[in-house]
Length: 129
Image 1: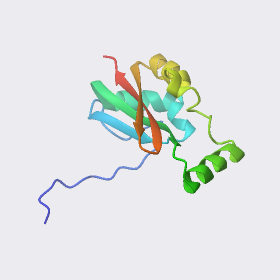
Image 2 (image 1 turned 135 degrees about the vertical axis):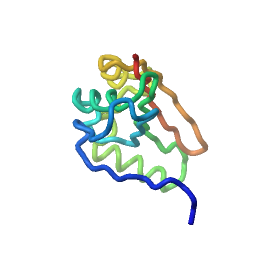
Image 3 (image 1 turned 180 degrees about the vertical axis):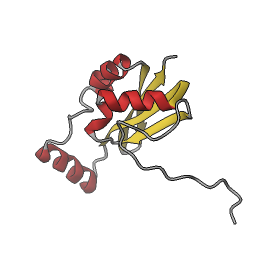
């Protein structure tokens, strides 16, 4: 036995989380679907966060390496036009994410994290009391 605490699985819609108000210190979303930016979803997330709790969103990533695999992935993003949706403008100070999260009662900071061969943009929204 691992001796850890058993986790409870809860299923629900992002717009109506079946969780107690103020129950969490943080909510994490990686490369989320557009519904995350819907007002009802952000209200539900804000409700389950304690005051000062954080919503952490890995909003976008880019392969910056010169290798064939990185070039292929970036080419696929370009031809499918999938890059530049909800995350467009994030790296330049928050863009749409910053405006929407601020309007939903979050203080927003944007972090650009560079690693060898990649760059990731993380948006952090701290719940205002």
